[in-house]
Image 1 (spheres, rainbow, N blue to C red):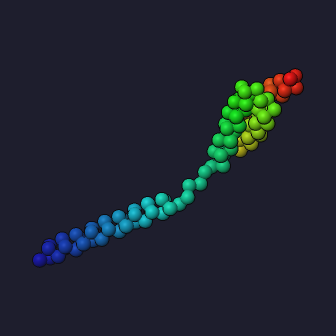
Image 2 (cartoon, one colour):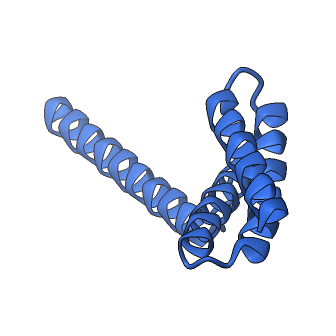
Image 3 (cartoon, one colour):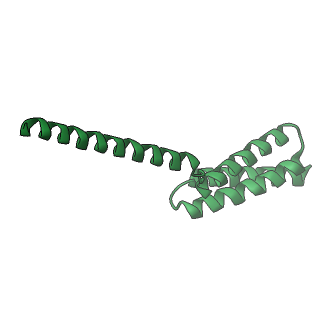
Amino acid sequence: MKLVSAAITGGLIALVGYASVARRRRQVARAEAGRTSTEDPTQAMLRHAEEADRARDELAAQGRHGEALDHARVAVDQWTALTQARVGRFQSERQAALRRFEQLRTSAGSA
């Protein structure tokens, strides 16, 4: 009789434990799903720098050097901000943006 009572008690404890763990998992999943995803600010800066680079190149290819120069300036500013935010990274991208800016400035000055 004691053995049956112990087995029933053990079964009930296991069932309550399982239900508790399952409930906690659902709560955590619900909280994570409801939480807004926060983006790293450097990710937004990186996206803007890359967009400015693309716009600069497209406008320069179309012969719109004045507008390309504006986007080149923005790209340099964004890459500079990224190098300051992430020390030791994005140095080559910043240098490339500076070179392209100087090229556009020189070509706009001679045109």
